[in-house]
Length: 332
Image 1 (cartoon, rainbow, N blue to C red):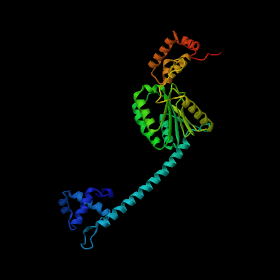
Image 2 (tube, rainbow, N blue to C red):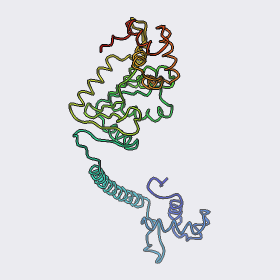
Image 3 (cartoon, helix red, strand yellow):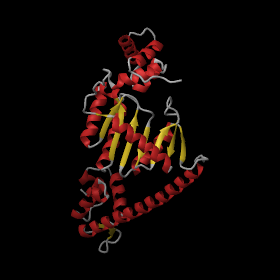
Image 4 (cartoon, helix red, strand yellow):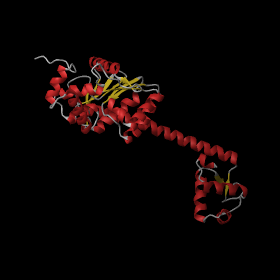
């Protein structure tokens, strides 16, 4: 019962026994409590250190257990002293951490362009994103051009999403249309929507993008290897342009709960994007990456579009797409 006050169970048992039998020695206490004598001696040492045992004025050379009202005050005072010492250690740790952060900031690679911070490697990127996420106050805007999410990534992201939404942060994320074909991803996105987040989808996205409180943006250095490096942008002009890009894409994106329709050409948004990529000469791998689907799915999509156009090659498909009004005419 006294463990909450910092007294272990054996010492508590010895203390109680000495209160009820003040004259008991080590052997008697060990027999009464069914404990080995070394354990009793160790408990007596502990009680003495806590001042719960004090020299007896009546029996010279013996120790007596102080009364419970005094003993509890002593235990509480001991805990308060421990807490005060712990608080001092915490404050000292904060000072050391602040100094380390300042020294680390001085060691960051300097850039010739103000408002641009380079992050090399996935570890640096994750650390920086963790800091930004912890400090966000109002809004996070994200382009997520990955397609279907892996279950382990969803499990890792949910607590972070929940924390942001619980803090009242506005979350808007644009995913690829292909996530609608991933049941576990769709379940996750519906969960975000239920918690108050906003999700929309588009056939393709220009880049991965995270904008925090409209004052900081993170984009990858390379679209082919987003883990290799990223840049953190804080320049006012750059942020205005990136926020405008996001708002433009968001305005044309499809809400998660709405079914994607077909345009006047009979094309779905994904097909319309695919035919443009096909006409530009992109490979199945490149088309699949832009649409967030596998190369096999991209190949099947391209084949279906070529058949609908009556084309035998991708070049011919591009020509016929222009002739059919699926693509704007190309001017020299």
